[in-house]
Amino acid sequence: MALPPSKEVFIQGITQDGRTFRPSDWAERLAGVLSSFRPGGPHPGSHLGYSPWCVPTTIGGIKCVIVHHDLRDYDVMAWDFAMNFAKDNELQVVEACLVPEPPAKR
Image (cartoon, rainbow, N blue to C red; front, top):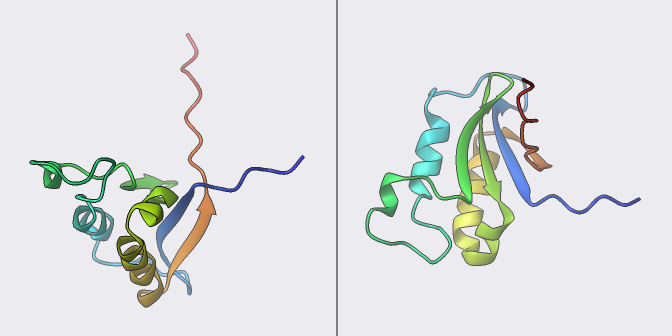
């Protein structure tokens, strides 16, 4: 059975040679720059929240930014900005999808 293509790219805060990327708030800064790129376009106050297409998170203790492929469809220059940020800083990039946590057992 063939797996469907991933819809997300994870930019990890680990360089190609295994170092932790600094500054420690890089993920929030990158997502903040891209906050106005969202479904329906920017609207008043959109700079106060992250775009659903570019979300900072921590996975396994590693800072990451999850970039959804819909960003590329909406604005290729915004997509290129995120991907070039990763490339220029030699960050690890992984095509994947975020799997929701299972419901808590009672």
